[in-house]
Length: 70
Image 1 (cartoon, rainbow, N blue to C red):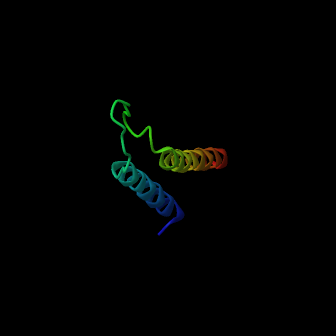
Image 2 (image 1 turned 90 degrees about the vertical axis):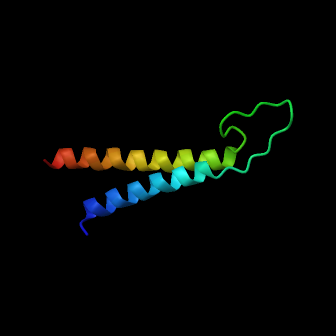
């Protein structure tokens, strides 16, 4: 595989993994305390946000380097 296809495949698999992680929540709720979305799973949210941020930064850096060489 070419490096471009490897990067694309890795980014796609990370997005699928992030979707699977966010779909499997184990948060508990206390009666009377609203918890909308995934607000109670801070560690899981932080990992997903950091991972997607790293993928986005890597993609931007790749595109910036590629446009400079063209």
